[in-house]
Amino acid sequence: MKVLPELLKSVEFGGGGPKAFGIVMKIATKLSNEDFDTKMTPVLIRLFGNPDRAIRVCLLDNLPLMIERLSQRIVNDKIFPQIVSSNQSESLSHVFLELTRSR
Image (cartoon, rainbow, N blue to C red; front, side):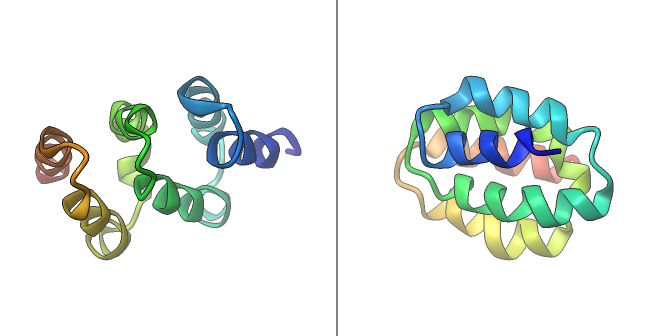
């Protein structure tokens, strides 16, 4: 799967933005858990730290596709602190908190 790394680079560093991320998540649903952990999790962690509001909203929109595949430790230690510490939008923190509570 050579397309996924390029799409991830486009989302993270280029101009792919939320549209490319939607495609990435559709591809990611077909990955094994091991591939998801090695290819997607590090990028997702970095994207949750991204101050771009459109990316963060897209991440939250796609949360149902990824939440079961992220370990509780990753969510608690790496992702949630980035959401909480972000001063971009308190409502995004609230939505994320509610979604993770339902898990």
